[in-house]
Amino acid sequence: MEDTMLKLAYFTQHVTLNRNDYEYIEEDELGVVFRYNESVLCRPYIYFRPINVTSTLNEYEFTETIFECYEGNAEIVSQTFTEFEDRFQIVTRYGMVLGDSNGEFTGCEFTYRQDSDNIFKYQVENSIVPKNECCTPLNPLKLAVNGTLECEVVNEPLAGSFLCPN
Image (cartoon, rainbow, N blue to C red; front, side):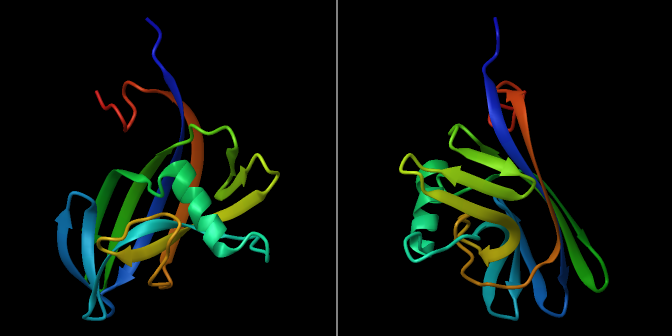
């Protein structure tokens, strides 16, 4: 029996948060939670930032396209969290199914071609989001993030993938 193959995007994020700005609160089912500047509860995530916004392709269209085609989220595959005297270090691996042939990655740049010949280009970036608002097309806090992000696309069997672990 042949296993179903999936096209998956993986994002490996290395984020460093300064203890002067962030306080560790907890780990929940979606990963680590911090309090930023003694107010908002937040967590590291990724953001699909539109890079070719025009008057006809506005930011709302970009947000809707990512949400409709990819449900606006990336699953956490794994996360490690380390506390240091002056900082927190978080390494997270996210996964996303690329079941739509209209979308493709070149490094951390994502291009989506609609049937109407509209081309949406996004730069995938690190972000810090409110605890309960993890959504790839949104970056409501607009906080600067110290870290790196690597993106890779792989073909992987369903069995053993992050969607269906052994």
